[in-house]
Each structure stands twice: as C-alpha cells, then as structure tokens.
Length: 297
Image (cartoon, rainbow, N blue to C red):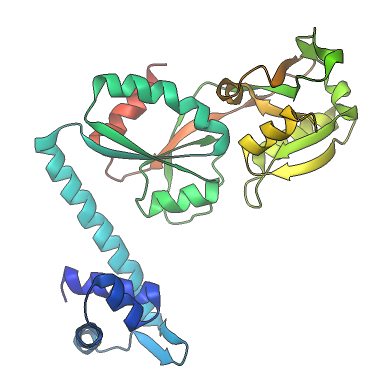
C-alpha cells in the first residue's frame, strides 16, 4: 500500500461512492474500484459496507481513514519543512480569525509584508469550532480569537500567545442625539436599550461575559437580535435599531460617522485575545515570524 492508494482511499471515504470519487480524481471507475479491492486484500479486512445508498466505512475502514489522514498530514509537514530550508520565508500563510478579531490583522499584515514581501496570505473567518477543525486538519496554521478558545477537541493541545486585553465599549447609533455630546455611559443606562448581541450556536463566551456584566448591575438586557456577524450588527446599529457592547478593537474597522462608541463608566471588564496554534506540530517560518511580530507589540 502506497501514498497514492491512501489518497484514493480517502477520496472514496469522503465521497461515499466510487463514481464521484473517480470523477474528482480524474480517473475511470474500474481502476479505482480495483485499487480499493487491492487495499482490502492486502490488509485482509473489509473497509466498506456496500449498500444502495453508497459506501459506508466499517470500523476497520474508519481506523484506516484516521491513520491515513494523520500520515498524509505528517508527510505534508515534512515536505514543507524541507523545502523551507532552501526557500526561506515565502509561500502562503493561512490564518483563521473570529469575526470580532479581524480588525487586529490589517496593521500586522502590513508590517509583516514590508519585511517578508514574498509571503502571501489566506484568511479564513469562522467561530471557534470551525477554526479548531481547520487547525487540526492543517488548513490553517494560526488562529486569532477571543479567549478562552472554545474549540471542541480531545486530540490536540494548543499553544497560545496572549495579546493585550481589549476593553469593552458601548456602541450606539449616531442618530441617538441625546448621547451626541457624551463620551461615556453607565451600565444601568443600557437597561433601556434594545440590545444586539454577537453569538453563534456553539461559541457563547463573549456573549455570556456581556450578559453577566449586565446582571451584575441588576438588569437583564432587552435582547432583540442575536447575530454571528459583526458587520450585520453594525449595520443594524447604523440604522438606529439598537445598541451593543463590543471589544474596543472592533471599532477600528467601522467609521465613526454611522455609529458612536461610548466608554463604560462603572464597569471595567475586558476581552482577552490570543494567537493559537497546534502544540508540538511544525510551524512554517512565516507563521513563526508572524507570531514574533505580535510578541513585539
């Protein structure tokens, strides 16, 4: 059994059908079927249960899938590490970020590109669960996220570089003229606001942090909208629909003409941020230098 056969097997396992897998591999169906038969004969086990709906992995097949994925990822890491000895800092650096941390990237990417112009970037946006899965599959090398990192995994541990804490601020529509001359607000005043909150089905830490701060001051916010998109919440605020509490760094990506930021007078709570990567796994030189850039802040 060789690397090529493992790649064939993983494609069939992913598609659950020989025909679709063959099409994606740009090969005919009979040769691919023979390759699967050869692997089963060599191992002396059945890898797939065959039924009308397609192919389903057996217990042995699932074990082979896990081991094959791990082996191919290790091979990819070795290949990249060896190539970098000659190539230096270049290639594509893949980064993931939660929506509320995207604003931290532009300045650092600009500084990084000045020193390493041969590096290009691929940026993915998602919640902690999605980005955790992409880290484990080596689709990305680094994640910038609010802490604690809520990815659900028991397979890998993470290294985390904590960044500067980010104070929370209140964001209201610029059209709320009664607050036009103010620079700060008390928590109790939020009790009367229609409230918008950033929340996904699986990552709720920041939402809970804001809700807890409100309850500590004796009220339950009047939540009229839960949303997973910072941009959508900002658009709703700009239309005068409601207000929110966001980490201050988020505001750098939005013009002050459509929304207004107010400091919180009687609550000093912060959002912790960090860069996350897989512990004891190979990091490209570009990823290492990108982390070092944040260390110098």
